[in-house]
Image (cartoon, rainbow, N blue to C red; front, side, top):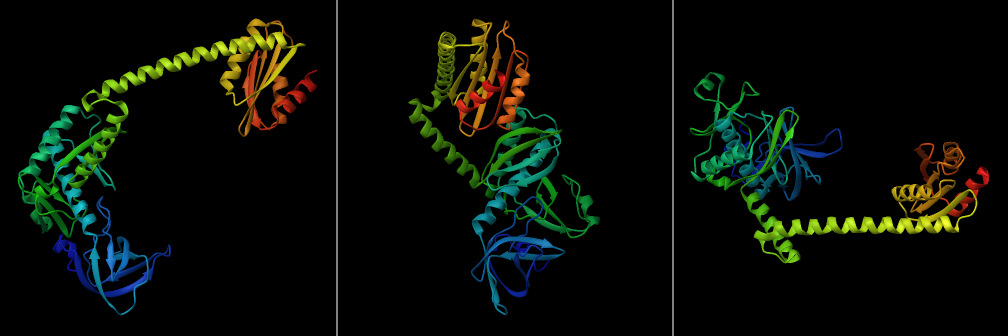
Length: 393
C-alpha cells in the first residue's frame, strides 16, 4: 500500500514519481505505471481521479492485476522523472460525495434498518439502492435531517487498517468484500464501514446533503441525492429556472403552481375546442365529397393528414352515403397513407383491394370488411388513386 499516496494523504494534490512502464492495453489505450501515485483508481462505486503527468492529461486510472494504470492522452518521454498533479476540484468533490454516502446509508440503517446494497457516484448526482420495497416521504425527511445533523456536528472521519482479528471491536455496517488489507472508514459512534475510497477528515467538510428523489427498482428503492458543492450547484440551477418561469408566467414563486395549473386547464380547453372545430371541418369535407363525387367509388388526395383523421373522415362519409365506397389518400413527408371505407349497402372486397394497393407501395395495413387502412413508400397520390381505381373497376 506504500505506493498508494492517496491512502497516506487524501489531500495530496502534487507528487513526484519514477516512470516504471509505458504500454498500450488490449484496446490500444496508452497507459503508464509509476513507482508511486496520488491518483485514485476507479473502484468501490467511486470514479477515478484525473489530472496531469508532466503536463500530459490523465483521462482515467484503473487498477488491473495489482498495478495502477494511468491512461494518458499522449505518450510520455522515457526516462523522465514524473511530476503528477491531480484535479483537486474533482478529487474533493468525490471525497464530499463518498463521505456523504456513508452518512446517508448509516442514517437509513440507524433509523429504519434499511441496508444499502449498492452505490453509484455519477457526474451530477449519486444513488444508493436500499434493501426495501417502499420508502415514504416522512422517512426520507427524517433520514435527511439526521444526516445533516451528523454533518453539522463536525465529527471526525478516521481511516484505519485492521486485520480480521480486530474486526470484532467494530459494529460494521455491511459485510466486507476482502479478507486482507482491510481499511475501515470510521465516524465515531455512528458508522463503521470497510471502504477503499477517499474521504475528508471531518463530516463538516461534506457541507450538506439533499435527497432529490427515489424510485422503485425491482425489489429495491433507489435514492438519488447530492452532497457538498453539488447541493449549491443544484440550488443555483433550480433558482435560475424559477427566475425564468417567474418572468414567463408573470407570477411570484409562491403562486407558480396555481399559474401552471391554470395554463394546463386552458390548454386542455383549447385542445377540446380545436378537436370540435376539426370535427366540424371534417363534416363539411364529407358533405362536399359526397355532393361532388360521381360513381360508386369516390376518392380524394390530401396533404399531411394523419391516418386517424382519414379514418374519421371515412366513417363520416359512409354514414351519410351508405351505397358508396371511398378511397382517401394522404401524402405525408416520405410516406403515403390511405383509407378504404365502404357503406353498408355498397359492394366490394376492401381487404382484397387493400392487398393490391399495398403491393403497389410496398406497404403494410389492416382493418375489417368496412374500413381498411395502410401506408407505404411515397408516390404521387393521384397516381396511386388512378392505379387503384383502375384495377377495381
